[in-house]
Length: 267
Image (cartoon, rainbow, N blue to C red; front, side):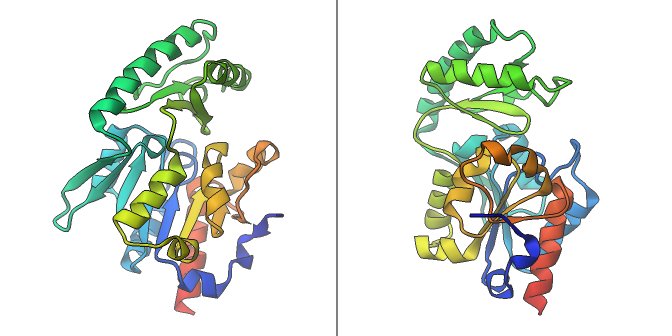
């Protein structure tokens, strides 16, 4: 299926939306920062009654801050390991994919294996936020590693998968986690268990926005899916691509999408 311009997203689809799920790094941010346009878009979507839920490979500590500080309804963090939600009085709740103690033990085993692999890739390093992760291991290849170590990243991915590890690349990290879950599986569970959406509801009422190959599980399952413009550099290696594409990159593209959706809903 070819990717269409954002303008092909119909008024009917925009008016039926209740949720926008979105990646964070290089989808809500751009060049490492959250643009003022993105923050304004999030506030406008919330005021319109649309629930925005970031779905990120970022660490739980950072996601806790996002849930507390930004106009979002919750955060799916660490690639689907945990949903950080909010009670009616704005307290946070943590819902893990499996028992938290079990997932923390698995993380310790993964960390040992990853450290052994990294011996062969001196340009790569554990992400600086590793201490704030509860379930997975993140390898930095393009966040604080400059210039980005793309070739090393690709070779490291091969080495990790050869060990049977579940490794996926974002625009800045390789994320290594337990088997059995991903962004989509936790998104589906959250939409069903927390918000009461059936699978049919999810197909019509949820739109997903992303920028990288680790968003493929979401693009494959949500027919209403949008890539911000910087995803173009990854499309050649992606089996599942977004249905629509913004003209602007990162958070500027997200703001472009928000403006389009809100205009369609007013119309």
